[in-house]
Each structure stands twice: as C-alpha cells, then as structure tokens.
Image (cartoon, rainbow, N blue to C red):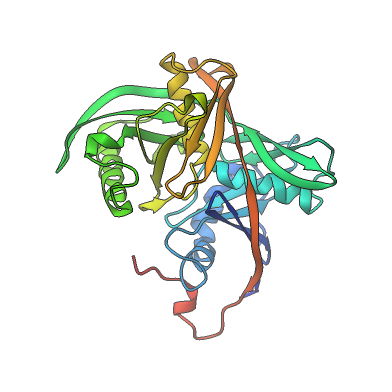
Length: 333
C-alpha cells in the first residue's frame, strides 16, 4: 500500500484530516459519482485514515478530488466514522484557509473567494487575508430550508418529543434538549449522545425525506440538540450535533447551524442579514446569518453565511506494514 500524506487541522475543535497525497485516482464526472466510487471501491482507505490507530471514533476527513464544475477551484469528498457526508461546514472553513495558504488559489486582500465543489453543490468560501496570511473564513451555504416543523414522536424512554427537520446541506432533526430533560453544563455528553441517537433512529423510520436535486441527498444525517435559545443580541445559543454513527461534533456544526438558521427564518424568527451566534459543546463559536432568499424545487429556501476559524495541527505520512491487520483500521466503540 502506498503511503498516504495528510494535513491535520481543526475548526472549533472539530478535526479535519485533509488528504494531500497517496490516494488512488477517482474517475472523472459528477461529484456524486466520485462519492459513490469512493464508498464502493475505496472504503478501506476511509477506515485506514479515520479509524484507530491513526484516528478515532470522532475523526473527520476531507479528500480533495478533481472538480467537475467549471467554476470550482477545488472539489472535496467528506468522510467520517460511518461513510461520506454531503456537506461539512467546519471542513469548508478549514479548506478555505488551506487553499489560500497552499496556493490552490492566489491570495487577494482583504478577502479571497474559494469556490469549493461539495457533494451537495458549489459552496463559496470567503477567506479573510491580511499581510498575505489567511485568517477567519465565511461561506455561503447551498439553498437550505425547513423541511417539516413541529413533528412529534413517542421515543422510549423519553416520551413525546417535538422536533423540526431542516436541510443545511444535509438533513438534521432539531430539538430542544429540555425535551429530553437535559441541560448544557449539567448533563453529561453521553446523555446528549443517547438522546440524539434515539431521535435520529426514530425519525429515520417515521419521516420520509426528499430533496429535489438528488435522491442521494435525501437522508437524515443526524440530530442537533439545542438549549432553546435564538443566538440573538450577542448571546450565544448552545447546541450539540450528533451525526453519522453517534459521532459528536466539537464545533457548532456549519451545516447544522445553516439548518438552524434556515428553520428560524422559515418561522419568521430571523430576518435577512440578521446575525446569530452559536456555541458548541466544546465552547467554540460560529456566526450565522441569512444571506438571501431563494428557492429549491419550488420550496422556499435561503442561503446562510457561516463564519468561523480553523487552525493547523500537523502533517503526517501514514503507512501500513505487511501483516498488520489492526493497522487497516478498527474502532473500540
């Protein structure tokens, strides 16, 4: 097996392992076809990079691939402990800075635009540049919308739970953590994971999803539990996103914040250009605001601007010795 080189970053505490070399070439064509190829033919490499001993249960990765859209500066496949997501805001923030720092796009002060082709569509990242150095990054989301509101399910052992489902590049169930008798700062992370996982499992069975662009986008990615706040007036609203196979996002979650802002706008709770502040379970923050109104498949939608900061952690080259079966990747939970 060829060595695989990576650059590790984090955005608000959430890891982003960017593959920089050693991956087999993927076929040309639409990015969803590339995603399917990686899932069906190269999934052993996802496990090699995401799982132990090189990664961990909550590791997250980004594989740079050849763009299909003419306007894209780069294209990316996202990977995690379960498979391949369609959108990842924290990774987009990291990739925006990475693209400027590594010459994938020429730096322009004070802001450099980086067009990133994601499985959910083209995402424009704006990288703040000062004295030639990249800093904070914001991006405008794909069209996002409230899919269903005020749904209720009887979920053991919690009872009747009310929740929304919204799309922010991926579909999320969104619920106030108080409906599970949880509170931030008092309840353990494990309790949030159990509650969110229960809601995701129940909603997957009860609520059929549809996206007008592609059936590949029509799946429930996870659940976001909130503190019930709005994030207005500079007072952050806390949330935790539990996605894929009970993976916990350390950041506020870019696509999750997008879904929350889209849902709030649909309810008339946030106007265009109005900023909201979101805080993760680790204490990191993203800003989110409605950028503009639009439509997708005849459904009212908005694009949302998310702003955050990414940092570098290190660079590595990963290898596999002959006969090392555990080195192919494993998880203990």
